[in-house]
Image 1 (cartoon, rainbow, N blue to C red):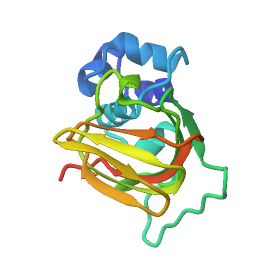
Image 2: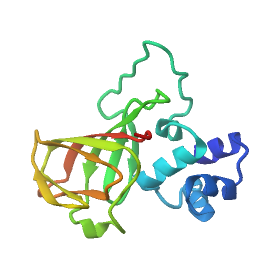
Image 3: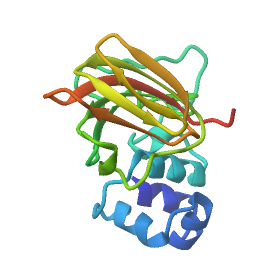
Length: 180
């Protein structure tokens, strides 16, 4: 889908790289399925192409209309696995959303599993559905959250979520990626 979108805007890999802040080789590897992009890279690609994140995953995004809605049945979201998280993108058929809803399974057990804490524009909210997680952020001590707990934070502050229970934790994650 990334290659199709990039080409539909008549962008070379170099131009897409300049717009998104990613190396052209990274975009090529994503397009060819050689690497799975991090959530931060997904946000960068969407911003660089001037599109909603969902458009990177939905085959044909719906035109925004008044009174629009989306229903995602259990397990039918668009899955995007990464080494640290398995994302299930929800409401992907809607484009131009102001936030991205995700169901995420947390595999990471330590912030050391990340090259660095993730930071991007916007704000985030997550609600722990199962398992226990530890929220790691710049400026704050790690915070333990259990089922029913939630957190809201500024995404420009480096952050990572780690499962601290025996099983992978599952959270409902909502991320805005608009300029605030």
